[in-house]
Length: 260
Image (cartoon, rainbow, N blue to C red; front, top):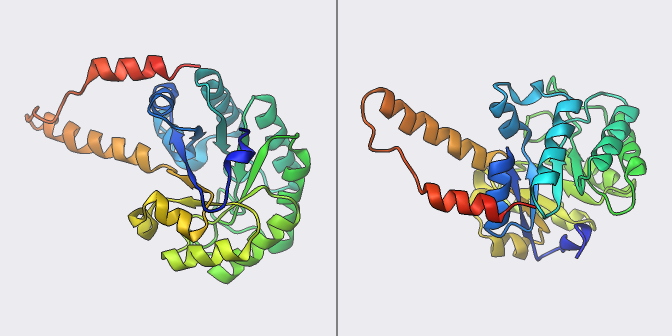
């Protein structure tokens, strides 16, 4: 089954966002059908903020995961690393050359400003046209998440992105499950959902009942590990070491099992 064929409305799979080779291999060994990068998760490993990673570094990170696991790898590639349609096209070309199975690009800049409607559509069109056969391009409408536009505008943009050929549509953090249902019903293309906020309460079956085709973890798993550092590490620095340690041999076995 190709990566695109995995996207079936009403029968979602979990796109497991990793942030390094170890996490990618663990997730693959535990049954992840596909892995994705997490821009925020990876940035943390470099001691940077989410928007401080450039195209070359993000693509190199994606290539590293492709070479590390035997499942399809998609990449979170921010806004395509530039405002112009050609910037988005070049990002997709480089992603495909790196062996990535797909990628997503946002309609909001690194400065957290929404690209105008016409420019946003042109950017997605250029990304689609640059994608080789079999490459799965996911168009993101991120304005609701950042409070830049409402759900109606997100749906208008997603419908336009679908019209120019986007394979998958994605509006992170749209609100309650009913908002997600509106998005799914407004589009023919497969829809990705992010399991955060109110949507984190849904089971995979409930996402399927809404009609979702893919559920991504985003930075949520990376944030969970960061929380452990904060809590157990903080306790250790205060002299309480009871929260430390883990199943080292089991983790080593999973990392080995998940290798390409």
